[in-house]
Amino acid sequence: MKIQSKSLIFLCLAIVLLFGAPPAGAASLKPAHAEKAMVVSVHELGSKAGLDVLKAGGNAVDAAVATGFALAVVHPQAGNLGGGGFMLIRMADGSTHFLDYREKAPAAATRDMYLDAKGNVITDASLYGYKASGVPGSVAGMVMAQKRWGKLKLQQVMLPAILLAKNGFVLAYEDARDFKDKHLSDFPESKRLFQRNGDFYKQGETFKQPELARTLERIAADPSSFYKGALAHEIAVAVRKGGGLITEKDLADYEVKDREPVRGTYRGYEIIGAPPPSSGGIALIEALNILEGYDLKALGNRSAATIHLTAEAFRRAMFDRADFLGDPDFSKIPVPELLDKKYAAAWRESIDPDKSSLSKEIHRPAFKDLDQVAGLVDPHLRTEIREPMNTTHYSVVDAAGNAVSVTTTLNDSFGSHVTAEGLGFLLNDEMDDFAVKQGVPNTYGLIQGPANSIAAGKRPLSAMTPTIVLKDGKLFMVLGSPGGPRIITTVANILMGVVDFGLSIQEAVNAPRFHHQWLPDSIAMEKVGFSPDTIQLLSNKGHKLDFSGYWSDGECIAIDQKTGERLGGTDARNNGKAVGY
Ligand code: DON
Image (tube, rainbow, N blue to C red; front, side, top):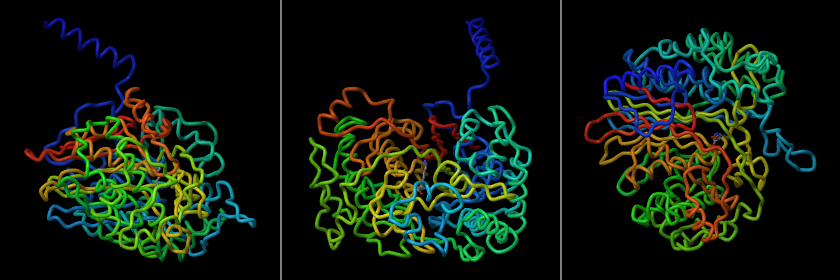
């Protein structure tokens, strides 16, 4: 027996030596366990930056900010200084905050800025180049959070990121692959930094970013300079040179909003979610309110009956998203009505358990004044789903029970693909999250209404869904994911996995995902994990099924309600990592 186990160890060692260690985040069936604190993100070094700060005496907010800045270095596809995000905080005393540091349209932005003289959308104008960028909010948001709720000095919290930029980090296969992005080649500074002017980086090489290190050091020394001061001036000069709209005044006028999160309940669990300008919290709670009327547990985890009802709930919530949602500072959003359980019950009446609805024929039920808004967005429009790959989510819980859930983005992978000259960071293409023209789908196939048209100073509607779930008033889960519109349904899939089907947080993150966004009228399903029988039963109900696309990246935490242990659920679809102590 002894000899057998010795030779097994030797064999394993030989395999590791021959083929290298298994990648961080290799598929796991069990959650990572930690007694006191946990950080979960898409990148091991991002998670580790947060953990180091926790061990140095920081709290969950310090750790989240450390992870956020570190991801701007080690995951430039989505981690960022030049983008925006949402940070949902629940302190151990029960107080909650939702920091909205979403990008804002520059003052010179206009409703038709991406249309040609004939009123047609100019291809890619809202996606690539300086003109696609909104005024970035990430630096302001992270700095404000750290200052208000953190315990350490900003310099301390930013140190891991500065060192990672200065000393470099080893590129994974996925990084080397992503850095070959053809649009990065279109912009000389991006080509120089991420593609070594055509001598592409390879997996295993160390990637150093001296310009970014310098920018981070300058922010750490004087964070306000990013918005008012030398850095702001340099950003504005680079943007002007590149033909973009962001000015020094836009940067100076940028403000983070501390908003009230939206709240709902699902089968007795309390949900704290993202308010507008995110559609995430509202669409998530609305879908769950509809689903609460069904005994999904009895119908079975990912049975055709459950998938059908869930897709019908998603369809309706996403229909409402299209008509109603946008920046609450610019339009009146009927939040209480959309979150009303009676409204969900009215929607339920229209769901046939045996037959799929048709998106172009669903009618909003009469409820307060909501139904008067029906049909702002034309359901006959054709739309398809592209594969957006990046945005990133990270979750933190500390020893005291403070919890932070952050989703941040440049929108597309590498955002607008433009790197601010000399400053080492990419700028977002968040302007594409607006309805560039009424009735024309954005890059995620989303069609959106007048509430989300472009205007100066406005924030584009987002699907980012950082979420916190309570059980009996106590912290239970910290959830979130990237994935464009699939963010909302991914968070719903994970939450229901735990609540309805008794999965562990890791099993719920692993479980095969499905999605419906009203238009296109099909259920998007993950290729692996659904049986042919289930697929057949769904087709029999009349659903069109689509097996393409990117399946998000849930980076989540649950708390063991008996032991208080922090349980990390990281996504094996990517190279995520849960670390704790
Ligand atoms: O805010 C939003 O909804 C989008 N900009 C998010 C994009 C995204 O998740 C892309 N990645 N997977």
